[in-house]
Image 1 (cartoon, helix red, strand yellow):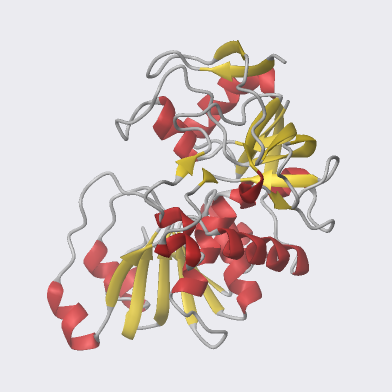
Image 2 (cartoon, helix red, strand yellow):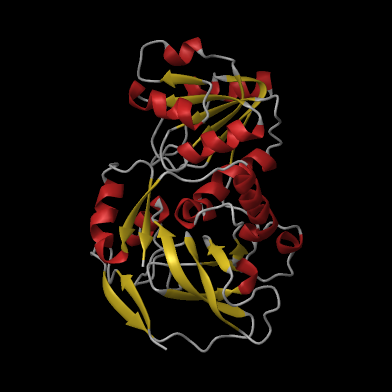
Length: 334
């Protein structure tokens, strides 16, 4: 069987039609007929080889929704015709300490869906059945696709850092990740503050779940919000005034970074010491947490705000994502 995809043959090159013959379907694998695939900023990093580990030709795409069209002989946890999702991770060893603890992203043998493998900008994909997840019927496919990476990225730190319903939570950035984080934090029961450079997204942030909005580019705005938060999630891929953001935390507060700034962080030590504050990060979700996230999103009607685009128009869609002209995610429909 020939699989049809779009691939880049070198860093910065446009995507072109790309056909390939997959390996025979392994006993533990499923084949998925793709109906939707989100464009994530990580796809741009891979296309540009920003992380110096891209293998070309590269077929990006790791926010995949589709139906199982074939299953290997050892697959017992998925059935043909069922609607499933696949995120950043497509495999792990299954027996190391992290896998046993449900923290598969930290497995030394973890496999990325579109790094060293061909991803979801395609009509079909083959992955381990352990890393495809049944989608609740309450989740429409297009808004659900970005949950498989973006949703997992912002849901996981709420669990991992013990965020409670009585906590005051700040979300920095109202973009692809931030607009999902606002929805999750509000559904978590938290008091939510959105931070964005200008007031342009104020109304949208409030509609997405924020109780308050802070335009950080306005003089004195950050200082006025000092010592007001228990947990601050930074989704912005930008260099920020980190001491000022650290100053937003109450004692024992946590600043968690999920958006990758281009420069190393510059964090003063004294506020960490005297307030027992912490700075940390978070990445995607293990299998158990991914299933929990999807159920939580379905229960609370959480989904990405998306624009749908045919796969053949992928280069134009990527250009719009690069230029920041999308609110909030593009989902390709092969």
